[in-house]
Length: 437
Ligand code: MEV
Image 1 (cartoon, rainbow, N blue to C red):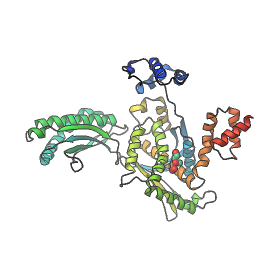
Image 2: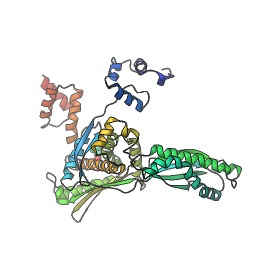
Image 3: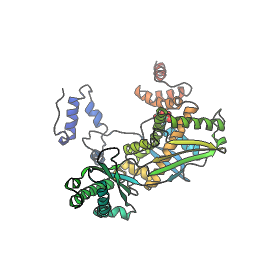
Image 4: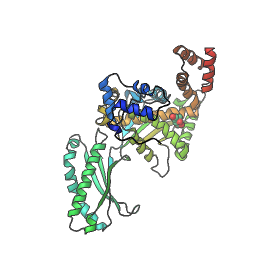
């Protein structure tokens, strides 16, 4: 049994690596070197990365690439993507090119309301609680005033505080359900600070509220936290074109559109398919969210919750053919920021935002949604025509060749060879063996 270690966070980085190597990596001869080889030689940059989090030993690289030619609301973007999965950027680029020739993507922000809640327990007279809330609401807003000044200057702030009775789902459970406008910041810190101030003030005021009995005064604040579910912070992305323009290889435009719509209907009704379908959308979304220094876990959680909004997990995208016109669209919640957090700290996020012409949070919502829609279009297009493996394995070829330590010359020959052959791990192994012999 390995003994627990205390004071680990206080150790120097090298000491941490030594401890780790001796304790868990005994079988890896050069573990310290592997960790060190990813340190940035620029010590300031290395320190910046180390300070993003705790107990940092090294940096974990992800490829940072771009998908060019994205025509969105008549502006042509090159979209930055941080992603390790082969074929995602290629698929995005293909979809961008395809829709660029058919009028491009249209995107629109339908709402920007963020949510936070103070969860509390109250077991007394509900009418008294309602009256107390009515009286205390202006006091809560006033108490948060110093926290909201800057946000107000930027056009944001607290939108509303509602008292919600949740006792039907849990005994004594109530909330202050609060809504916010956070403009170009994602707003997590602003929202959480406001909520904690509300909670503190709410409790204090309850203690002083004479109409309450002693037990009613003793409201228990359980927690105060923003919600990553933002069903009113919504963006819509869409493409459309006459059906004839969808003709693909040996498929007529009508046949393609019909099959595409059927594939979407399956994802709308079948959760097993919907999860994978939406995963494809998130390939595009997460890559841009990550590249721009945003919180992809928050986005993931919120988007998947939204996919269940009608009672069962379903497709986020939809398609239809009406009067000879094919339309493909998606509405999703996205809480993003273009100021604050990592956006201004990580040099690559700064470059990514610069590349996108320093977008507002609303612009970024549109770009991210389009990346998701494009990704889904490319995936479903492959699935209903050639199948996914053809393109995927071509892209995967490089990964296999790298695993097999192919030289640059061998790679070149193998790429040529696999233009005419199907890629599989064993086929690449075999072909490389033949080449080497
Ligand atoms: C793979 O990362 C994503 C896909 O499975 C998405 C889909 O099936 O629609 C190709």
